[in-house]
Image: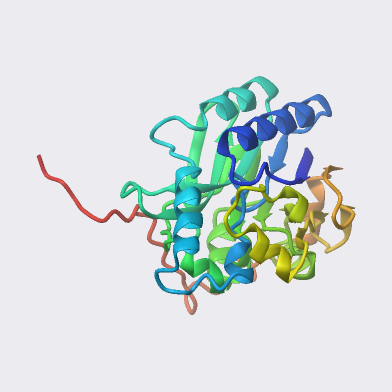
Length: 309
């Protein structure tokens, strides 16, 4: 299987333009023979980096309110069909795609950090809302649920995906291993210092291939009319440097993006390597003890209300 990881910059806070860039990248990956592609966490319309640079916890600050309103406005509305063009591109290119989005909640006043799995023949097959946003992200994103903790079949291969620090959560990883995942996607905002270590660990722990994607974001990508732009620039001019990496089941690096460079990296996976590496360790197979240690996963979609008509 030939796989690709996007290390790109979004058209920051512009949903329509970023979705067009996504479609272009998927088409390009298909032309290069790609069968599976991963995009960064909340790539559409971008990661809320201002939370870490502009005192986002100031209560009722007018600039923070305006920034939040813009973020909500540019969030992806799945029910409205915002991803229809991307779904069509995936079908045309034959590239199974994991796309990180800011998903608009049904309340229309909250958002989730969601990882959407798009199958070339079936369309959207899962929408995984991040279980627990990290640190400053908790000011931006609502808690998700387990509805998207699914592995999918593609070309005879089991594929799965998690958002950012969910990949550090032992039980979230176990939920994927238990479904027989062979190729795992880890979507990041763009922090190689974090993503590289855990990607290698997951590869060795799960005896799986890991595709990590991360975004590039600098002051040059922040729109001039974004109300918190000056505050962000005062704190620095680089917010994400990519960190895309593809790792084999033995922990070896197959491909890696140069820091700060917009690129798409590719690797050809020898899937037989998975069985060879599981010879002496299979975390949810012969090296598990379900009689002693077991995991329960609730995959119900959590909604604020149940309507009985």
